[in-house]
Image (cartoon, rainbow, N blue to C red; front, side, top):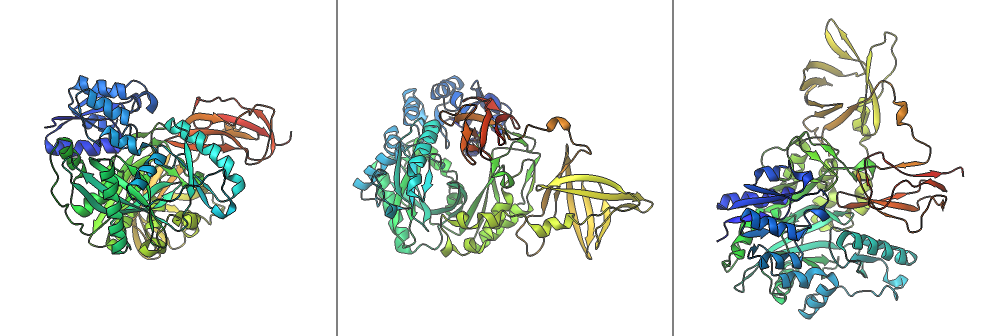
Length: 625
């Protein structure tokens, strides 16, 4: 019997495992970097062990330190969560060698699936359907489009879509460099890119007694930059025979490598209904809550059961209803979806949905880790009801702090292509992202239309959504009144609430102030897909002359690390518009910094490995030279 579990991870998944352990009477141990010393998952653990340093390479990726921490804290089992060392066969073997229970599959099973190229060979031998690989040296225009993929790792790292044959060599080089930096393995392979395909996966759970459960399907087709955004279970609009084909293939995959524990077999389903094996994730998935919701299970509790050597029941419970999950990220759509940092002042959702989060009110969102703030999960008897419930909860959420992708999530859930399950495919955002993230001109116009007036009311200027708004107001005998808002009457105002009458309709606005930012939330308007939530930044009356920079200066758009500089690039070089100069890594994502225009690189003050803050000078391109 397992009595104490160390979670070799952080944030949301650590809290998720701790929650089940508490329910089962199992004590918990956290490990943490210096950056996470005050994090809520550390506070919630019964015992915590410090891993000196901040970077993942010095902390959560140090298997030797984690094993030592488990022994020092008296843990008798290790749960890897997802990411970091969760699919590292050497770490799993080290845990077992230390006399600790490993809450995951055998090291040999992890090793078998660690390389996508070797995994495909094993799956072919087991009769699992596959896409035929493409030799990049022999590829022709007839093979297009192609997808370059890293053999190791995941999360979209080392993945490139190639639509022109002339770009293949450049994309291979870029994918190899990114894969080597992210996973320590620069091996990549090329396969056909299936246009109009769906990303469908099967949750499996296997014990040491020959039982393999296939716990239904999930659809994860809504992906941006190859990262999942919205997931649901069961995968909608699948014919029964295709669903059965996926279940049989997942069962064969698990048995082929003598799998134990929780895992996921991922498939690409083409528009004509053919399924192809993509990869097998030998761990718990981020999106596991939707499977838990429709099957009424606790997958972490079942992982613990299997790790203790106990058998599963002969058949899993049948699915019931539908569940949808949305990933809430701290990222700014107006700045090319760059990860955002800062204080999360408030994150609150209505009752009736599940919130899995690694942060709490007052936490600082830093640069070292993934920008996901939370997962929001809704269950209902039908898909339509679950989607409506999730969209409504996100719409009504109070999110005060860094900019998030909340608007994208709500609009995606209500988009006609999503509400029609037969129209789902992985190209959803290729077709619709621009429209989904376009500024709501009608909504913003409510804050425009100002004019100068002779009597000179007081003025405050705010920025919201990239636009500045000058608000003119007066304080008279009858109280506060604002200029230039026909049809709007101020009824009451206080420190945390304002009540307006807008064209005869009374509306309440919750107001929260944090430094120079003012967060305003209101009940949603009927017939809109945009949450009624705004963040206004109070602007100073006079600009700071010290903020000016030399023309052509490229400033760091976020805190991060310079992971590489374009080969051979030096000061004095001639560069072309759009030419990559260097790459920043922040929150597990790489961001390319390119020349804004043709010119001469007159300054390159950074080097590989340098940590930079927002606004750090990265390079200067003189367009006049």
